[in-house]
Length: 76
Image (cartoon, rainbow, N blue to C red; front, side):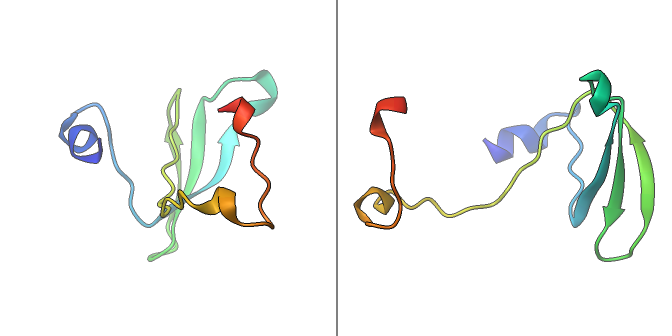
């Protein structure tokens, strides 16, 4: 999936960047983002009408067997 997204010219990847603010959430829409590069500290406004946050995680398929983590299988 990542390789396909990286080949799409409509998608821009902003690495080492965090979202500081989302503009116009109170109107239930996204009109832009305030971004900050964690390496350089640069902050800028990024006009957009959508956003997707990718979070790298490691799947843990055996978590349901751990007593401290309740999982409701009926919602999957």
